[in-house]
Length: 180
Ligand SMILES: [Zn+2]
Image 1 (cartoon, rainbow, N blue to C red):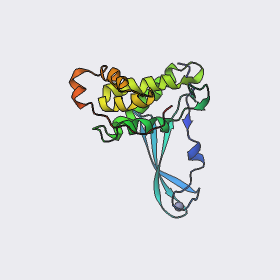
Image 2 (cartoon, rainbow, N blue to C red):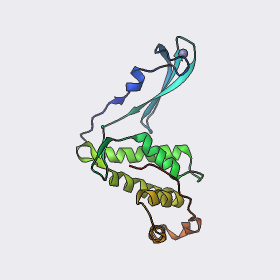
Image 3 (cartoon, protein in one colour):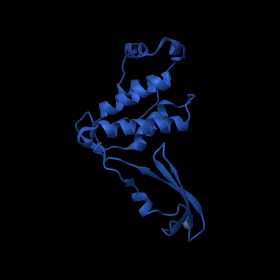
């Protein structure tokens, strides 16, 4: 793989204490989480003594998203996480499952993106496929926004993709969300 490995750590270099804004802090503990490709660092502010944690994430490539309008914007992992979180609201899906989902989609994008560029359609399709396996309601909610549903028949088509065992749970509440 021609990935460029590196730590996405610009926040760490200018890390400010969340309590007093001092940039003078020391690391007291570092815990790598190999599975999620992150390192958690426990810090103590040398100015006010407050303790806080920072997270460094390993980023292989700097991805760019080409939107339907043709406009390019940097891939925003947090935005991806928020849209999935919203689709899963009040469902039996925990934060850890969502984080895993975001990590797996992010890695797939990094692996499959030609020239570091992905399309919003590609991102939306990956999220949609992943949610279909995770939770049918989250899948319907996400699809309705991602595919810009305007008619009841649009829902019918998407519900037909859900395995029969889950159909009984197909009740929709549409969240407002900003998608890629
Ligand atoms: Zn402080």
